[in-house]
Image (tube, rainbow, N blue to C red; front, side):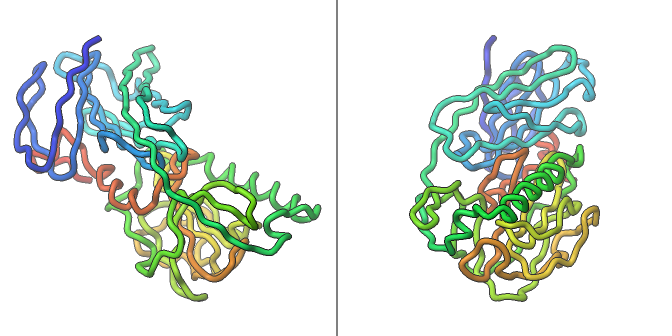
Length: 318
C-alpha cells in the first residue's frame, strides 16, 4: 500500500492536485497529509514529542462513500482515542505518553465495517529533567489505614470522572492558561519525594498565594469537584473527546459536577490543599488517560477548532 505525503505550512497557498484532491491553503501551523486506502489523513504536529498531543483529521477522497458513523475510534501506542464526525470527514486527538522512546509508531483508525487506516507516526523522545522535593513523611508514604481508604475512594471517583466524556469537542476557542503568574515547576519532570522516585510531574505549577481566583482554560463541563488526598481540592473539566483539564490544590471550589463552564469562568481559588510544600496552582491536561504538556496543548488546541481541508476557503472554523 503506497503512502503519498504532502506538507502544508503557513506559506502554502495552494496544493498540487493528487488523486482528485482539491487545492486548499492552511491558515496556520504545519500539517502533513497522507493518502491511504482512499482517505486523506491530516496530522499535526508532523513529529510529536513524548508528552505532546497530536490532532488527527481525515476524509474520503473522491469516489469513497463511507459514512461518518461507521468509524469507531483510533488506537495509538495501545491506547484508544475517540473520533467525532465533522463536515466531510472525522477528527480526533491522541497523545504520546511520557517516556516514549524515539521511533515510528502506528496510528490505527478503525471502522465498524472492518476498514483499517494505518498511519506511521514518527515520535521524538524528550527529557524533561528531574525535580527533588521534601515533604512530610506521612505524605510521601501514606501507610495509615484511613489514608489508604481515602486514596482507594479517590481512585474510584477519578475513574468515574474520566470514564464519561462528551462525544464531541466542546471548545469554542483555543485554551488559555488559568493563571499568568510565574511557573514554579514544569511538566514531565521526574520527581523524587524525600529521595524516593515517584511518577513524573503531570502538569505545571503556577506561583499563587492562597485565594487567587482560578479561571477555566476553556469551555466544558465539570466532571469532578471534591477534595482528594494527594491533589487536595480539585476541579476536573471535560472538554469532549476525553480531553480534560485539571486544577489542583485549591482553597475553595466554586463549581459543581455537571456544571457547564465557559472559558475564563472562575471555578475556585488557589491554595495549598493536598500533598504540597506551599500554595500554588497545579494545572494539567489529560487525554484519554495520558497526561500531556498543558502549555503546549494551549497552543496545539487551536487545531481542534479547524477542519483543515476547509480553512483555505474561509471556512473550517467552529
